[in-house]
Image (tube, helix red, strand yellow):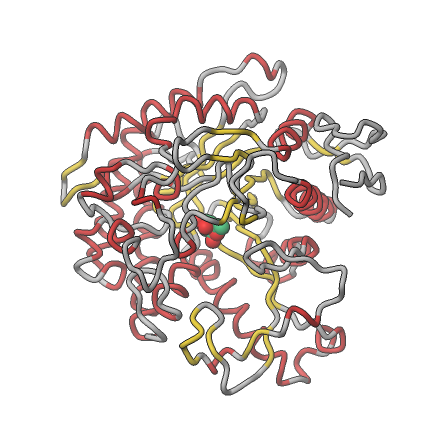
Length: 474
Ligand code: FCB
């Protein structure tokens, strides 16, 4: 690891939120969900043709039994915010039926988060919960009746939200209705690699889109009825779509190859944001940013998420090997492109839509297929965090109202169709005995939160985890 001193000390605005993000199905692992097939994913996880092994039978990282330890690890990060999701399938067992034991789990989680934290001195004394109402996973009793294609799901989502806001509304100010409706639709109805598993079924895609939007609208109203001051938004996955060819970036409407990028951007990035803005149901936007995509027109194209599937409508991904040698990707092949975060944050269209409403980076993270040892070289994750925070800081200086950053993810966890192998965590988890071991990036990120930014200092010590400016891979 070679220290790199060539960047400034960066302070973030006062009250900036520093957190991590997780999702119920990816961490909790309560055996009753998998064994009782309570959710669509509890069934899907067994599909040999769709989900890579190992999956450890839905135990994920057993957060259900490690919650107290996990919250103390969150405190160790000097975090003043934490994003989690409710487990809809375990909480809501049928119309009007809610499970008290599960509800108590979230009481305890919130109590743990809100306990005052004297270690932070002058800074925030509580860990602000950001609650996601659904992070992809549907109760099976709704999935079996058509899921989001059936408006019943949106109405039950509203009932579920009413239950949540009545029970927890005094402790939660920030509500995220949906996580990434665009990713759910793309993988569920286009490539078919996630439930409900349809391939290029655009009628169902748009029916489900309408269901998700109705659900968002009804949930927004339900929350505001109980607490008019609550802040309600959703988390959208935004890709930086652009051509790698500089000439096309500058003259994009003159080239056919630019069209797939422009269309994708509109449907994937903007459509759902626009719908929520039109319906006047957006107080803030959560942005999940990971990477850039570049498409070129090819009528014979295959869907990148499902090699068997023709998706000519969208064009074909440019070959990443043609990128400059500077460019790296993570071990899922996602290009590391921090500049893309700056570009999407400062895009004119986004600022017009949001008109200054707050933005939170609700996910951003680096993944490695690790050998299973906690003391891995974590320098790429550290560099990833640093570069993306520099991009966020530049956007803030340009006037973009970013109020918080949540690293994905607190823990190595279950990564959907890719099973247990990809590791995004700041904390390594042994998948057999569930032992947690903070990685170097955990210490790095905790210092950033403590200092409310990156600090420049001499990186003389070989392994100086206490200095966020060090530990970078160049
Ligand atoms: C996002 C999801 C999250 C996780 C990360 C890697 O699209 O919201 O659950 O899988 O990707």
